[in-house]
Length: 384
Ligand SMILES: CC(C)(COP(=O)(O)OP(=O)(O)OC[C@H]1O[C@@H](n2cnc3c(N)ncnc32)[C@H](O)[C@@H]1OP(=O)(O)O)[C@@H](O)C(=O)NCCC(=O)NCCS
Image (cartoon, rainbow, N blue to C red):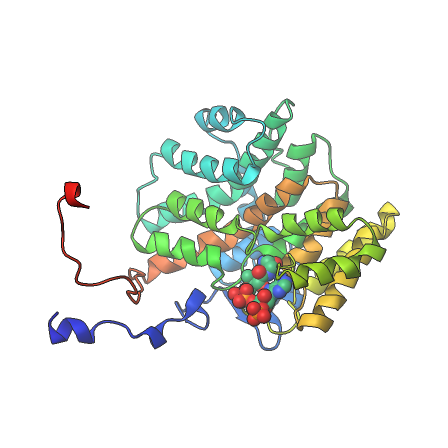
């Protein structure tokens, strides 16, 4: 090995396992302040936005760096409503998946299929990229709803152009008009999930688009990354855990057992937040309200006990997935749609990051430290 090549090899101490602490990009979209528990979208603290602006306003904020005025908001809503319908070929594909297919698989494959039907899929002009981004924001919920209806053997419900994003999704999965309370809850959830700095799925979307691949490939990558239980898949894990525990009296023994066996408690802990995730109190409040209305306080009581035990025993706080699980459950949504709902909301952040990456692109290509063998000599297959 030449001395030049040897010098270019990274040292083992240069490795940050899980890329912890590595800064991978500049972004004007969102800031995650893990030390003080703050989340900012384009200059606005999340506490300034949650419950005050709609998801569509956040989409506009991420795409244009300012909150829309009434005309801009109406225009965006009209564009999104107009982009909802899927190509028939994609409807045929996603409605024929096996009923047992987990919705995140269906969504990932559905987004990939959308790329096959878009003749501008590889058009790299910024206008075309922006159109594809908005189309995906409008179509990801429709893919989810169509698949969900089809797997139950129910007729598909066409999108309603008079409804906003949150209400239209609830309409399309249930086939009935959602109450304004349900719609508002869902809308706040969308706002809270819309973007979150350089999280794993956003990073994967940026890696994919940085090769100058295409928007559909980037969002397909992101959905596959979100699906894992260490990322967006945790919200499903929370409800499964609560169901397994069953009652408040059993929480302490369950947590003790899990920690003893070195198992992770879903919805707890965060790579960046070392204090409370600022999204959690909003979701906790909604979960408390919904649980009281349902007259079944069991889920929120168990959740609160788990959160306080985990803080006490491990110094770990609840994250976004912890209380969102109870919110979605209380809204009567099926557990396996929790992560797709996260994906629906995060499509705003993913696509905005893709556009931002394209505006100042460089291939993302880290290195690794080789730990394998060296100097081996080839022998013919018969001699091995
Ligand atoms: C989010 C998460 C992946 C962050 O991981 P990370 O920064 O790589 O942290 P690590 O997994 O290395 O954990 C560090 C320590 O905290 C512990 N820990 C972290 N999260 C934990 C959890 N949810 N339950 C129990 N212990 C946990 C680890 O066991 C480890 O302990 P150790 O040092 O004694 O071995 C992790 O907290 C987790 O797996 N949480 C549960 C899944 C989840 O809710 N994901 C959604 C995130 S928004």
